[in-house]
Image 1 (cartoon, rainbow over the protein chains, first blue to last red):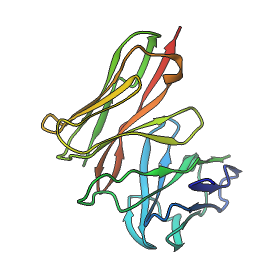
Image 2: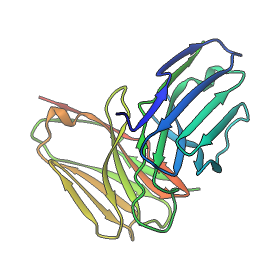
Image 3: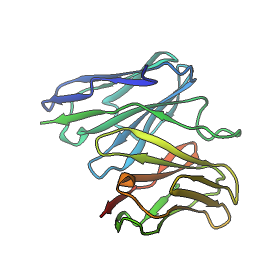
Image 4: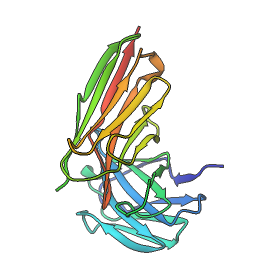
Length: 118
Length: 108
């Protein structure tokens, strides 16, 4: 049973289109994240939700809109796709938000969704 | 702005050799994570270091943390081909902030 599952695994689309990526975790974690990994493998935080509330919203174009219908799901919708959006998008979850005061907070990552914009 | 710098970014080493990957960061933090990523795959947690002087070992990998120097190291002992992967360190502040990764290739 996959702990953090993302769909789809691959997305190929034209510039200007809109697409969504879905993420679900069955770990009972309270916090979920979207990270973007570019072609040089650099990983950057985009968004984080804790119990359905947005807690991290990095400098990301507002074409990207996350939605968390419940604490086990976090979706990412992207409008008007651009060439520079091509990347692998990773969903992750953790027991509690990063930066908290207590103990380890290991992130469990999904398998990634590779988005290619043509 | 928090900076997390790894070096080297690329490492080719022979089987049986030892090497160390370095991770420097620019803020006070006592939580440092190491992850492994195989090509085309997800990230897998390797080590969590939670205090100054923390040392963790798993097989041929050993990680340590010096919070005063803002430095973590990942030491590889007697490398084998199966260790070929990209290794990331990450510092826990507000969010997990990752270094650029070290791509390790172990050759016969």
